[in-house]
Length: 241
Ligand SMILES: [Zn+2]
Image 1 (cartoon, rainbow, N blue to C red):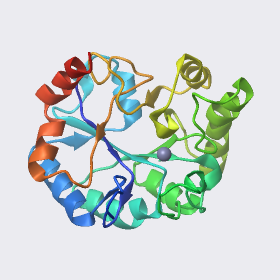
Image 2 (image 1 turned 135 degrees about the vertical axis):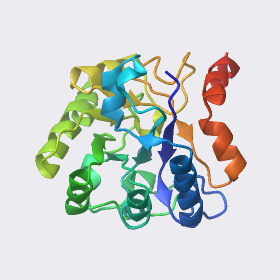
Image 3 (image 1 turned 180 degrees about the vertical axis):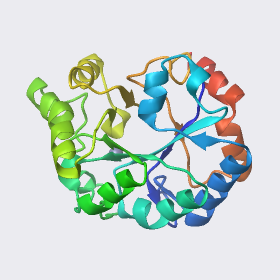
Image 4 (image 1 turned 30 degrees about the horizontal axis):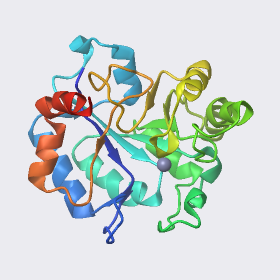
């Protein structure tokens, strides 16, 4: 199936060279556009449960995802989504609740606070899906087998305990994965995992490496419209080969 899975990180004024922030105004415009076009949000686990059969899904489904679970998701994105009757899936770094993006230290990436547990629980109460983004945001293609288990199974257990909610979906930090990482994610009991841009036949061809649409701060309304269109999602798979 070619259903758009949108990838966002921070909702704030983008700084030059920062591709992880989308402004509040742009995000509001994108969500209003989706709503007007008849899109309805579904949780990532709903998409996973549908497998390759869209019959039980809304007519125009879209999955909205946020990586790293930053504070701006709660303060900026949540009210905008609420206005449209939308929910999203947020990928949380289990050891970063109420802390900041410690995995970016030493890189040219701004520091931002991650949501504390009570805000994440409030989102879950509002119908948002909580997914795991690992325990420490480690690159799963580069860690030992022992760490792989902590990052996948361990992070799931930590989040379920801390947030008192089911955690059934995973998102590879840095979009990095290999066969071992993928097996660890499956073994830990997740139903689906998001990558960034694997060269798969369709968006959902590989349920453990789902392809996402990277919404960039430089995207114009026309870019956004194009990136979520089904012909573009289809075409992108061909372009990779
Ligand atoms: Zn991340």
